[in-house]
Image (cartoon, rainbow, N blue to C red; front, top):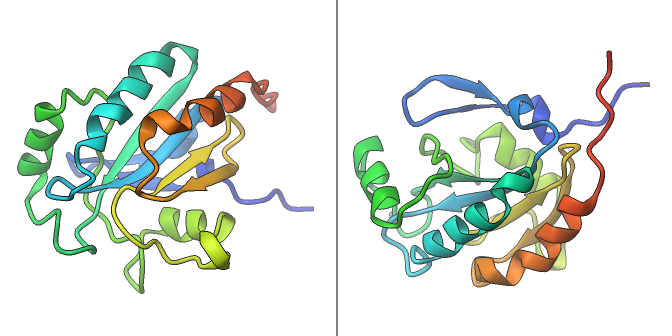
Amino acid sequence: MTAAVTVHDFEVTRADGARQSLAEYRGEVLLIVNVASQCGFTPQYEGLQALQEAYGERGFRVLGFPCNQFGRQEPGDADSIRVCGLRYGVSFPVLARIEVNGRGADPLFAHLRSACPGALGTQRIKWNFTKFLVGRDGRVIRRFAPMRRPEELRAAIEQALDEPAPARAE
């Protein structure tokens, strides 16, 4: 019997171009967000950072994935994306720009969309700042629409953090 695919099975590209395995986050609760620096929701960076600060020591991590597919609201290069993060005091990882929908969609986001469809069962991500909460075991727990402010996710994050970490195979 094969194990189900989890977020830990994927590699992503960091802002510096290096590849990183998400298995490095095994045992942590993740909030994976497609972000943009010129979006009406961009001030959510502050709320995402507040969540990182509030729960980071308990094994929580926000991962931001810049995306330019919605209104071309992330047109810049890695340096301009980094400047936006600095403006909001972001300490969580903001990775390389990706696509979240269509043929060029990053495999991680194809998995997230499939594992946790949106309203009415639609898989397509509708806009920037769609958020996916991932448990310590790498399974997608819940999807949140862009208009859900980060501070509204606290109860769901706390519940996920209270779940025991999965046993590691030896």
